[in-house]
Structures are given as structure tokens and as C-alpha cells.
Image (cartoon, rainbow, N blue to C red):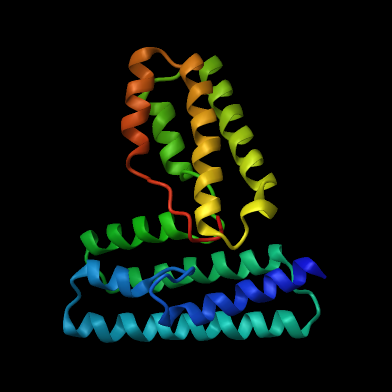
Length: 205
């Protein structure tokens, strides 16, 4: 029952947050401002964003009516919908704008509780990790993700607390990685992770 109440609150928050400055969902007005859209692009952009939000709302209502309201279903709708929305936006944008959209969506995708898979792959390649280091690196990341998600009940709905937990677990991760990487590799790692700073207001909270 408690999980259902939390999920219903999350759904309500997602659709009401468009009028709030500190919104929990993806702020598509912020993305819109970054794209420097033409007049024709603005009309298409607004139409797609509005349509996508309406579709998500309808899907959530249908899931709720079916009595199968759960976090897994909630996240599946969100991820599938946002992926479709990104594809529709990409259709009329320039290559530079497409890159901005992809990076924005990737970093703000609901359920993203850690650095992206793309960045993790880049770490392995850039640092030229050997097979033993790669195995240990992946194990440390998995331990981080598990620790952070296991602490969910302590920070759910509290962005400040989520940020505190994430930073603490990430410091533990960095300490573990220092023992795996060489001094040069660790310095490279710190530079790479600057590209994806933690944002504690999506599903991380």
C-alpha cells in the first residue's frame, strides 16, 4: 500500500511540476532554450512535447485503472515515451541540435541513478583498462548502484538527502577506484566524470 501511495504521488508530481520552478520531471522548457529553435521548429517542438505529455498521462491513467500500478510499469512507460519523444524531435533538428537533445535526454532520463553507460564505456576505453581492471571497475560501479538504490527509502522525495547519499556513495566509489587505477588513470577518470555531474531531482530523489 505504501509503495502504491508513493507511486501515485510521483505520478501526480510529474504532471504538476511543469508549472513549478523546481520541477521533478524533465524540464523541456530548459531544453527548448538551449536549442535556439527557428519559428517553425518552435511550433513543432511544442506540439511534440504537449502530445507526449498527454500520451504519458493517458498511459498512467490506464495503468492505474487496471490495478497494476507499480514502479516497474511506471518507469517502462516513462523510458519508452521519452525515447519516442526524442526520436520525433530529432526528425526536424540540425545535427548540432540533435546532439544537444540526446545529451539532455540521456542525463535527465527518469530512473538514471548513475553516470550513463556511454560514459562508463568511455572510461574503460580512455583509461585503456586491462581485463582485470575492467572487471573490478564494473564490480565497483555495480556496488555503488546497489548501495544507492538500497538507500532509496531514506531519501525518496527529498532531493537534498538524495544528493547527500549519492555524493557519499560516490566518494566511497572513488576511494575504491583509486586502488584499482594507476595515478594517471585516476586523474583521467576525474576529468571524464566532470562531463556528467550528478543531478538529484529525477527518479534519484
